[in-house]
Every structure is written in C-alpha cells, then in structure tokens.
Image (cartoon, rainbow, N blue to C red; front, side, top):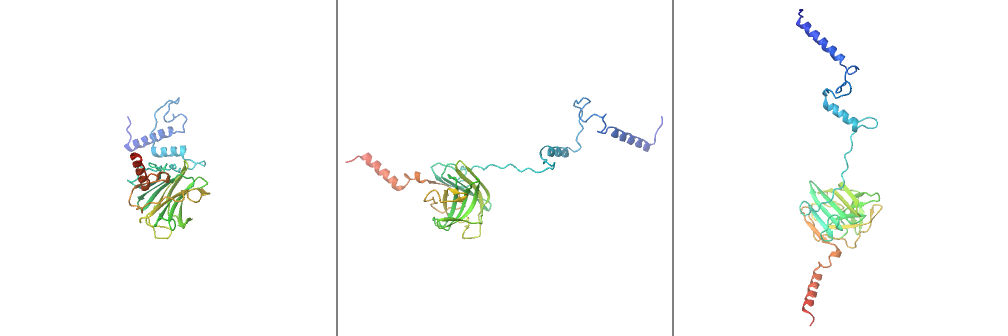
Length: 282
C-alpha cells in the first residue's frame, strides 16, 4: 500500500471535488433537473442559496413589471368616502342637525360636525341639495362680513371645498383657501364633504380664528357650472348662541315644518283650546 504525503492527499481530494462539480453542471444534459427524476417525477429539490432574492425576483416578474420589463411601484387603492358617524356626536365631536327630529347626516336637511385634531379642526358637512353646502362664522348672527367655508358640487361630479367671504348678501370667493385634506361626494341627491382647517390663523378680515366662539350660519342651495347661487330658503338657520370649538354638543334645530307645535304661543293655544273643550261652552 502506497502512502501519500498529507499535502498530496489534500491536492488529490480538491481535484476530485472540482471534477465532480464540473460534471454536475446544470448545462449537462445527462444531469437530472433539480427537483425532478428522469421522467419528470418529483425528486430532491436543492435548497435556495438565497430564498429572499429568489422570491423577490419571482414576485416582481409575475406582478410588478411594466410593458418594458422594468419594475414599478403600484399606487395604493383609493378609499371610498367614509360615512359620517353620528354616534360620536356630543362625545368626540360637536354636531348641529337641522331638519326632522331624529335625523342623521344622511337624512337631515343640513348637518355639520366639528372636532379638533392637533392644531386643526376637522369639519363634516352634508345637505339635501345637488349644489352646495356651507357654514359661516359670524359675530352677530347676520349675513355680512362673515368667513364662510363651502363644499360645491360641479358639473364634472366632483365636490370641491371653497373659501368665501360674505359681502352683504353676496358670497365672494376668496383665493386664499385654508382647507386641506379635502374629501367630497355627491350621492343620493346630497352633497357631503370633509376637510380640515387650522385652528389658529393670523387675524384677517376674511379669515377668523376658530379658537374664538362664533355664531354659526348654515346654508345650502343650487349651483350652476360649479358656482353657487342663492340659498334654498329665505332665512337660513343660525345657531341661537355662539359655538365654541372646544365644547362638543349634539344640537338639534327643527326645520320650519316641525316648529309649529314647539313655539310657546302654539303650546299655550293648544292648552287653552283643550281646556275650552273639556269645560264645554256655558
């Protein structure tokens, strides 16, 4: 038996390993494909040397290749307009409802909500109209000299947020618009929108500071080619007291059709008539 020097043994082993690696090359037609036998039966699969890079390349090839073969990011799906929640009214946001008793954001003639989010105030508005819905911030309950935010439904079906300033009985659009994060939808003959506006702003004639209390003016009406026209009712509702953005209440204001039996005079008249019928005529 011939004994080789240890260094010579190592050299022989390395040569044998190199020969085996070359003979087992994937380009050799006599070598079985990884994971299959001679007749395509499942065999032993060789583990990926880099499973993450293999997965990434296969994923890009299958879903994220453009027509030219270059990977590109896909835009996230657009979320639908989130419905206004009235269950939060008086708890985490303030609400004003105008219309039939028990109405909500989808059935009131007019609906407004507000809540503070950091240094912003988020407003939600909705009205039974195909044109526009707005809220004005007034110091005297009267139209004139008021900062107004309006949501307008245009001819293209979009709902955009606009900034106005009441000059007497006329709403003049102001180019400087403090609204951001705007959302809007026109559905079931209702204009609904949501937007944010800074809580604190430099004092200007056309822009009020919302950390102060104001009377709120509520209005809605038709629009022509994205421009607002006169409001639907002659005397739009106004909050009976100044509203603070820091106080969350759920305020209901009955529409004119539901105010008949709520005034003190009508209640007194009903009591007198009832007493007269019970006592009978002399």
